[in-house]
Image (tube, rainbow, N blue to C red; front, side):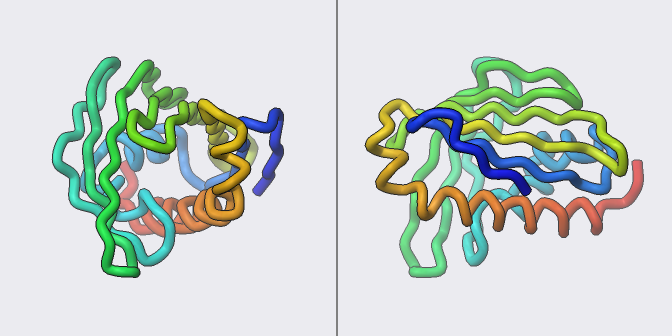
Amino acid sequence: MILDAMSAAEVHSSRLFEASRSEVFRAHADPALLTQWWGPNGFTSTFHEFDFRPDGHWRFTFHGPDGKDYENEWRFRDLVENELIDFDHTVLPLFRMVISLEEAEGGTLVRWQMTFEKAEVLKAIRHIIEPANEENFDRLAAVLRSMPES
């Protein structure tokens, strides 16, 4: 895992997964798989809309371990199968997320770049974002291990 703040408004996280790019992309594109791992530990989700295409919307509710619900809305900007997922979080906090999948020795290198609208917002929540990204990656790894080979 690599964390690298490129600017005061960005967080970069990455990890090498022992899976093909197509498997990793499928774990992002298939809502039945995505709901198993998207979010930090202890969170579950209910998807209301998942239109995985450019200009498509993804709306869901996170159910936190604290018993609270957290509404989330995203808009997909660009998708390149097995390579790129570019989307905007359209409710507060506002940010753009670019996920890239790169072929690497031993599997697929996944890079997340989160660019927040305001550096002050990221500064206030960075202590949550960085460990949450790690928990997401841990959960993604578990789903990838459990997926039947395609």
